[in-house]
Length: 532
Image 1 (cartoon, rainbow, N blue to C red):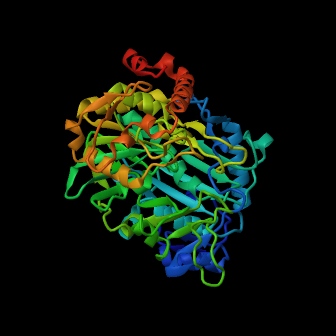
Image 2 (cartoon, rainbow, N blue to C red):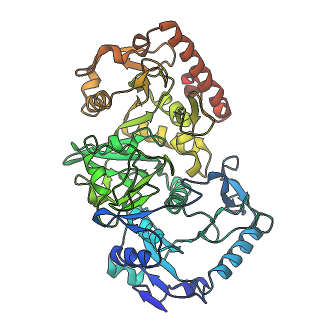
């Protein structure tokens, strides 16, 4: 049977999918929570949050993500970063997945990716789990109920965690699969319950489609000055660098926390929600994000909780350090209703330098900005992964390599063009370590980071005195009100300056070695800005 509101001309039967059990279209949050509880998919937490664990997979499976190699995309996909799948393998996968779905109940959400209607895509999410429907309804943008009567999808995503792929038959790597077919406008996900695969697949779609329109897709958060959307800032950064935390500034208006586009009209959010890491979440430092963890319909993923009181343990990472809360944007009081802003006035690239080398803030030239954008540096620290005993560099180009289907230079050149056209000021901000590497030094004080960001966003750093960093060549302010001068010169924070020099030389070489792969594809000004 069919339940819910759907375009009568666009049901699953119109996808040639029939023989299912009950199909629930576009259920709202209370109905999805009720269904998920009845099905035993999770627990009802404090305030009506929905608590789930995702089993074996508590994060993305980038090596299991495949793009179907057809003539239309063969020359435009970055194949070194995106595993290919044959059209025949995809066809077999689709046939077997639909056969697997027979007789089972499914949940369908008709949603929108992109707050700018001129550049948005309609996405149909078909999920085996009710809570996946709740998650993606939270994370993407929700059409008005009336609009569902005429809704048709540009792309369809089918997610069956209980389905196991056959690598030999389906031309994939393992039993877990995320397969994207741009010709058939379809994504198939199997073998993983991790909900982030749902939204990241939509990001990947937009990251492929938008550059053809001259639009820069960005794995970043964004905010704007209160009452002044023209004064927009974007924050690039990999997981753990402070992207969500720093953009949720109560003194500014939040546009979004994870993925945006930069068009000729300005900045727009892809999403309708936030997906925040909750490990060590502090109610004093981040009160609004903390409050969402006990609000109705927030999906709490892979957090340990007391079975009697349902109190969440924000410090226990025994399930994963990648514990998350997915909540709608309107749960943040200063979130933008329209989720759009102007052209970025400031571009902040966040890094968590566990080597203790980089200054807390540096100003970048446009060529240096492209260099650091292509580099996408942060670092892992001991304890985050098995076998990591000292800081390890992580270079994820464009600050989001797993979601980039095109070559990095496509996005880097778009960014540089937009910076040149609109005159954005670019900053590199280190939220990592100072006074020594991880294990010796201390974490950069968040109070100092916020003070430096405020000075940058308010224009006070425009008149500051700068010094040129001898290792990386960018400009570093000598003095900023409210921040100790010594913090702005990392070498001075180390007890042994010569140890700093050795560590800096080590990191410079890591940057240089990593960037060699881009040298054949970039212009001379970026080559000149390259660190060597």
